[in-house]
Image (cartoon, rainbow, N blue to C red):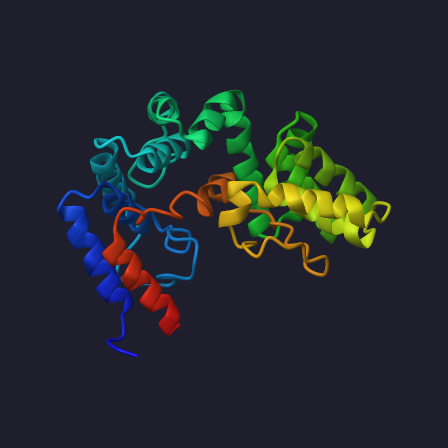
Length: 282
């Protein structure tokens, strides 16, 4: 089977390439320092790797190096970090808008989406506060925040309201209302909600059973790159596991986690081989 490729070896190879100036490797280093270890390649690679402590200041340093080479992933990440503010990095909407703007001009779809959604940035931040309550088990406080924001049209909050209704957290258990809110979020392009709606159509959970509609949704999801690169990468609806994307902070939503760095090594065949060997060993 040959030499066993360890996580440490992959990290060291990546760091060497980053120090030599390879933009994608620099972007990868930024991702690790940001704590984005699972999403970095879209697989289990380096999950739980302890060699890189979370350090947003260092993450920004690496992203800036890659951004100087017009790397759109790095520019997008810089926008996200400054949009939310992280330990050691102050929230700065002006900087976030600038980074998103640079990436958008280079064709970054998700930066374009961030700019189009700029009016909701403050609402997203409030949604985060609800997520914190939810994660602390304060479901009634969380639901009140989500419901207020959902009624203002925030897709992430609409999905969160649906989750609460679907689980009976902070409100009564009501699958019909849960589906209604999933549909609202799905209509606005929320991928997690679209997936759940597909599952619910398949089983008739809170909505009339319609397997043809479920299949139609599934096929549309397969065309969407976020879907292709997230944990649902088999592209197939699993009605027995709706994967409702239970409440998560908006700053950690799938748009961040699950697609940005899928192909960061597309220009590094040697590292691709190392990663593939490592995965095969698993």
